[in-house]
Structure formats: C-alpha cells, structure tokens
Image 1: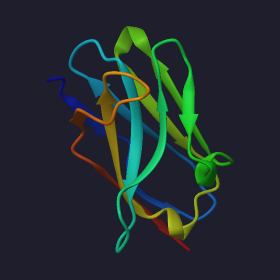
Image 2: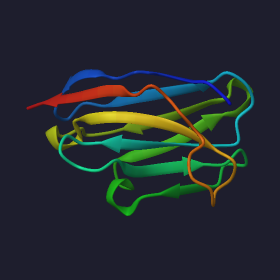
Image 3: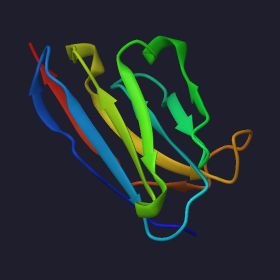
Image 4: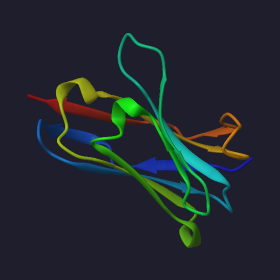
Amino acid sequence: QVQLVESGGGLVQAGGSLRLSCAASGSANVMGWYRQIPGKPRDFIARIAPDGRTDIADSTKVRFTISRDNAKSTVYLDINNLAPEDTAVYYCFEAGGMIFGPRSWGQGTQVTVSS
C-alpha cells in the first residue's frame, strides 16, 4: 500500500493560514483529508481525484482549499483564517476512487491555533 508522509502542521495564531502537504510514495489515486478535533469523531474535510474533481465538506468549504500535484503525488490543504476550533490532528488519505473510503493513511499532523 502507498505510504503517505504529512508535513506543514504546527502552532499558529488565530487569523493565520497554513498549508498542509501529504506526499505519496508512489502514484496515488484519490487523495484527501480528515481531521480529528479533541473529543469529537474523525471528520471528513475534502478529497480530490487526479483529474481535479473535488468533494468538499460544507462545513469547511469557505476556508479550506484542496489541491494536488500529480507529478509529485502530493495533495495540499490550504486553511485560511484559522480559528481555535480548527485545532485538531489532520490526517491525509489515499483511496481507490471518489466513492471509496480511505485505504491508506498518513501519520497525522497536529495543528494548534492559539487565540
């Protein structure tokens, strides 16, 4: 199975922006992101197919942008105007298609937003 390596998390102040990256060890099909806010279930954010088609959760559509670079087998998540409620562990995933659940997971990257 494909290995996924995440980067870009860290401590930021409210109102700031972050770009999270997730690089696959080889070719990747659909890639995307979940996050797990403390005390809540892991929640879907967005996914993107190699042709650029996207599926984005309504709750994050305004401030979250997903993109990918197929040549690098890398998916990105840009988060704007961060708020303390965005504090979570963010997990990238790879799936066999837009209708399938994750088959590989990244290690998770912590995003902490201070007020």
